[in-house]
Image (cartoon, rainbow, N blue to C red; front, side, top):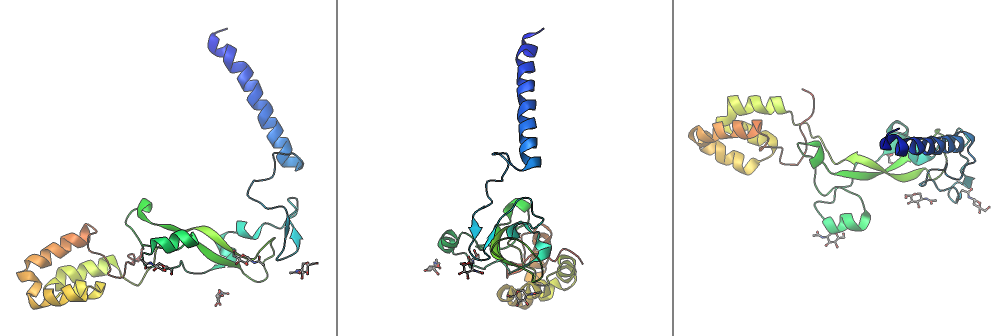
Length: 201
Ligand SMILES: *[C@@H]1O[C@H](CO)[C@@H](O)[C@H](O)[C@H]1NC(C)=O
Ligand SMILES: *[C@@H]1O[C@H](CO)[C@@H](O)[C@H](O)[C@H]1NC(C)=O
Ligand SMILES: *[C@@H]1O[C@H](CO)[C@@H](O)[C@H](O)[C@H]1NC(C)=O
Ligand SMILES: *[C@@H]1O[C@H](CO)[C@@H](O)[C@H](O)[C@H]1NC(C)=O
């Protein structure tokens, strides 16, 4: 028997015993370790319900989004201190990569007729700070290539000031026209209202 086995075997027996205990606790509901920590088992003042883990009713805040009428994310217009105070809301919109997109909580209300435990209005986490205002990437690219000398791409994206400049200079005599196509393809030219490209064409 090697040294590894000497340590490994008792460790494995111990782990299996722990798993056995936790399964016992979960299946029969009585174990001390069984209840999830974030569920409040006290009586809920708003509904006068006491949560019963064996009941078919789930906790309202555990329902998936299909059962909830959620508000749009709160727009804080970049106000960081307000975000700190509330603990939710969007200080910026969109982003190219998943990691760049801010995640916020939104106020959700369970649809009438859906039974569940607890407060039916609550904050649910995991909502991305993304909005769509009907800007399509392919359409904008076609505008940029074909009508870039008239500034049509910038007009459509809401960059009206630079669009007028582009129109008056006939696309910077062709140079700005080309540069904007490159900016668009590389993701540096986006809708002025911080909305995302609509993900279908
Ligand atoms: C239910 O939760 C919402 C949001 O957290 C809160 O504003 C409201 O006061 C709660 N209602 C009751 C009756 O506790
Ligand atoms: C919950 O119970 C208390 C005391 O019995 C009562 O005053 C209150 O109105 C009840 N709340 C609801 C939502 O039924
Ligand atoms: C969702 O909630 C809002 C605000 O409370 C309400 O105006 C709207 O009708 C609700 N939508 C549905 C589908 O019930
Ligand atoms: C952020 O919001 C708070 C509360 O509405 C306000 O007092 C504060 O002036 C705002 N800050 C900025 C930078 O807009």
